[in-house]
Length: 304
Image 1 (cartoon, rainbow, N blue to C red):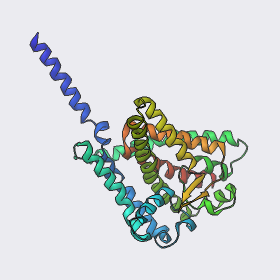
Image 2: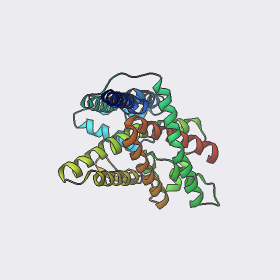
Image 3: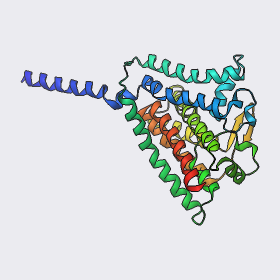
Image 4: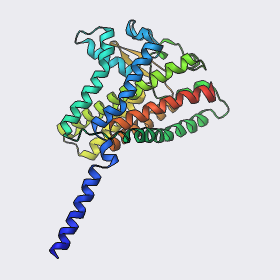
């Protein structure tokens, strides 16, 4: 009988070890996230140099394609005396250092299996599909008689750049942002990659973590309730910042407020928060980036 119990305990322990070291557990680690999104970070920096080099020298409030969340990090670095170019160079370091600190705090394995990385990319692509489908459905519901670029773009694109704040109306924003030129597609891919990394850093990794700390640790709110409150707050703020941005110490209108795009982005925020809770930062950032890239090509191909 003792031997049977021992065998049962050994079998349970083997299952536990396998689960702890399985694909989903491994790829949720902060170091995996860092290795996975590093190509996205490098691609963003290279695209800035090739497509939008004025981000390095000019005021971001006048430049199309400047990702708001990226600029927030730049503004943070300005407080340490960094100039525009140095802040741009060191912004990715903030992401890298944050993930390394989380990895150290978690005391988890640093080993990465290269074969997991393409599977993570496929997972991100698959996870992006529900948002694409939802955007298409909402777009049709918003204006079933029209295939205008403005309506579709206003719903399907989750990224926020400073380009739109310079225009007078939402229609002007969309017509100027989405034509079929390769330059504009490259600009939108640039913005989408930046949004995937830096919006997820701000609104999921930092905001949800800080909200959880405030509600659960400081106020003593029960964990599940604290999770729900934190997700709702982060999702609403994530959606609002596509319409109203706080940049360089002042508020600006990025896109005219509309209920359906706001609702879609709030749902997207909840969706990304669920992915973040279940799969970690890497898959969340990758899903967001792939979604924006797919949306860019859909806008150019189907509606441009």
